[in-house]
Length: 404
Image (cartoon, rainbow, N blue to C red; front, top):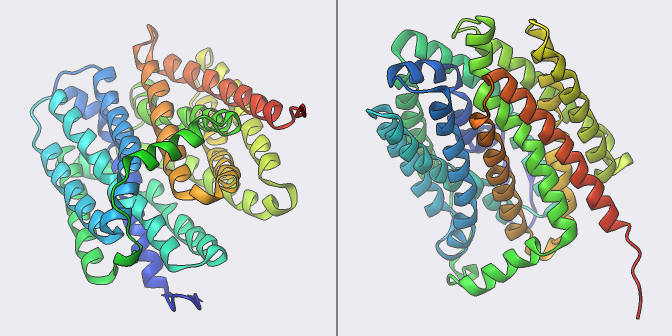
């Protein structure tokens, strides 16, 4: 149990579980319907590319939503934004469950992505309101650790729902989870941003802070490195189900077990990063993560010529597992650099990562090759680009200053 002397807030196991559940809405909305992508394509007689774009628009909506909810919550409070976001998330889920075309699904998935940002991103701000810096870091580590189970269970649950009740039941389930989150927020999460600390919406100052981050060469090179690293993950999320189900004949209700191997790798490398980051430093651990990801990308190339699922699974475990090392150390480095505008910096980094990463991954769907080849080539190019931008970052940081 953690107690902050300033706010007198106690962090109990039930509260950790509640916060983790709310934060997990977004990964649930991403991972839960992945095993059903081929079935959705079959229902609407749509191409794999069209259905894959439903994931792209969700992540783009989530990226844009992050830029919106921060300033809004500074003006009206965290709790209202979380409540509105969870309700909108549920409504979007209901609309997704009743669509009659892929175009409708694209529209409501975009809305669900925006709502997911409002419902989940505010947890970080709410925890920051309650706890001082050291306790904040510890609390968020508990929450992140707790929610790693979501990507592990979501494809499994989604696969069985799609098999037994049809793919629409997945969106009904997401709607129910959104309503449950709204109820739990209303009952157990108080407002943490008091009226006296709220600020009126000031577009000018917000844009100036955004520009401060985006115009900084050090920040920009790091953000591009992180975005291309995330593009590896998004490429797998968009295409992985098709590769496993249609390419290797994995049953819909079994594909989640193969996805779970990536989460195991993610948890392992997260643990290793936590053990060594204080001694090695964030930039060095970031470099190690990028090398692991690049090695996985190069090992993925033989899968284009060897008909074995393990030439896909093993390299993807390396690439997706390394995401934790890359993302956490980039965020730590950037927030230290922009400590006075940490909230703005965090939202910009998150939006940039999801926006650029999902755009790069979605571009792979229009390549004139098969799904597996498109995925492999995109992941390789993205991993190389992530390393190139990290090298540019090191060059900017180490560039000698010329005094006048």
